[in-house]
View 1: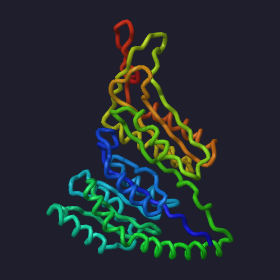
View 2 (view 1 turned 135 degrees about the horizontal axis):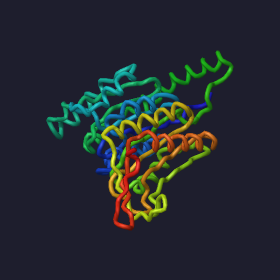
View 3 (view 1 turned 90 degrees about the vertical axis):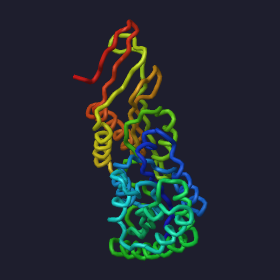
View 4 (view 1 turned 120 degrees about the vertical axis):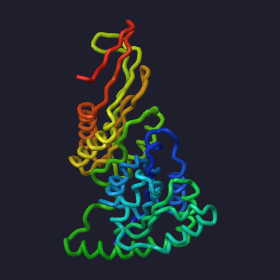
Length: 323
């Protein structure tokens, strides 16, 4: 019986951070906490608030982490959806953690008790939802620090017994340890800020040690189109575009269950050479990664309501994609 690898995952629910309006500062604090305590943890996954349920479902599906921490979405506004996304997965609540967390927060602000934070065990994963503020995340990790290793040990021991029994019954141990999560959309959004600023992090977020192939596609603004000389582009989109790109990515992921996907499309003014569209696909084998990348690229271009106005060298403008 092999010991389960200790892994961590941090998901940040913030529409503005996901769209590049500002940098997320809370996720890295939680990531560094997990890494410092021996959990193999990628950089934080940042998703729009509306996509948190899918992100949590994917994280707690095949090959879940030992620890899942979320940041953001624990308040009382209509956009705060993290608690609703996480609670159905919790089989054993840990109210003591939440009480300690509230006590720490109250030492700084009376508003701490307005958080709807939850904590518990979800299958084989220790889960806690934390606020989006850096102070709230620091209070959360202070609560977890003295007990996290103990909780993971207990959950891991129970999980190991279950895996051993399952292996005996079937004559095998199921998927190999370290297999990449299947059909996972790590990020899919419309961005108003440069994709170039996040693409390296996107590749690092998408690829795992189990992936033998990482395929990237960059759609770059070129200086010509249909015989015309192009000076620049202005992209605009329908209000449903963000939901549509997520839908398309999820459908592609369902067709390639062992692939991890990341995609984003720009809107706004772009110069020649700027990246307008990016896709990252990672899988154990190149055939799946290439195929998923190609399909996602084609479907986003065909189905997501995004249009561009080309500024031509003769002073005229040309709309593309409106027909």
